[in-house]
Length: 227
Image 1 (tube, rainbow, N blue to C red):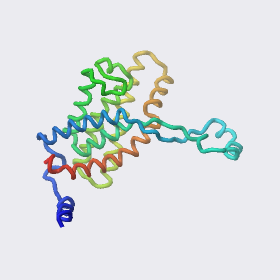
Image 2: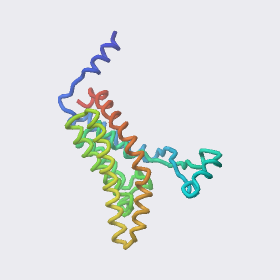
Image 3: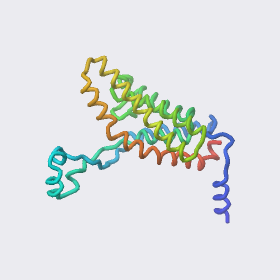
């Protein structure tokens, strides 16, 4: 009986605000969320992607008739789930407190704590991939703002897609600007874009949709602490 009453209360709980206001509870959750970004940074996932060799494109019939194992056309990608975690935080905490969680992560890294993939420190600003970290702010803001308007399926999908794209655009703009000032060729720039975005953005988009749904679920589950 008690469990049924709790489930009913959970199902019909309504918020005065779509996202939690800044209070001690939400601040503590923001600190915890900054640790989640650190955990995601150092928890790579091994995912398979389709990688057809040149032979498969030139002699398609012969290649597939002699194909002995699926391993011949699958390459393992080491995927870092940072961006979906950031999107989840935005969906749970909103644009303001979500960006606070991101700020705690970025400030800690620039202060010298080894929370970034290759350590920490102010010199990390010179790394080509730092633009993606700056993009966390943009993605969090966009995702949170879209979910302020509505939390229907269409807005969940839109907030995930726009949030991920915003992060990648910020990262690409940062590395392109850095390489441009170093007088690197367009082929070098495109190579770096493929290396840092490439297949990464495909998985980011897929996992980000799940992340937004999970973030909204956690928003509801933690309502006693956050409200």
